[in-house]
Image: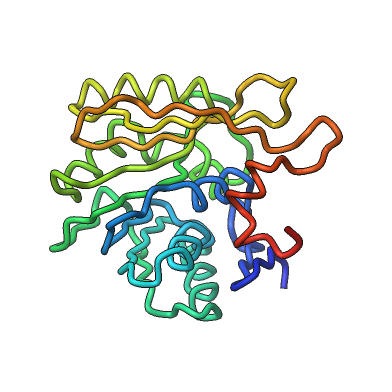
Length: 232
């Protein structure tokens, strides 16, 4: 089985356009789940985020939505093979998804390429490009499926993150927490982990480096991810 083995579960990803990545692991370990009872994972892919969040909070009721059929089937398999088979996976677009539940937390590792060159793999294009899920549509989905106390956490490249912050602000959301990611201390910031809500507050800002200059993991990254990585 091609995939990635974590301490409490395994994620097969050979049928998915987007494989297990550091982006997904960062978001799954970082997202604020405090006080939450329900969580929605938009564009679950392999099911990685749903599984990580379930490990972190066993009381969470989790629903995950995936548009690509192959990824949906693989996510079903990964959940079935995990200790938490009650995670619900829906095969549909988030635009067509409806729920009687208003989710406490919404989480997404969304597509972010906008008007850039595409390859020959249609599934990978869907997973990586905003054509099928624009930032506007992502924000609209959060607003439709959330309540006044809900939080929305996501990860984006830093440039796209700045654009998303501007758009979210225009739509009545407030950036509460912003963690900027560097691969190493001497590299530029490459990713933005962000949490938004309807409540305005002082922004909690931080910078996290993944590796030291000697290529070992930093103490901050180990503290964030050690409950997941097998050899950490």
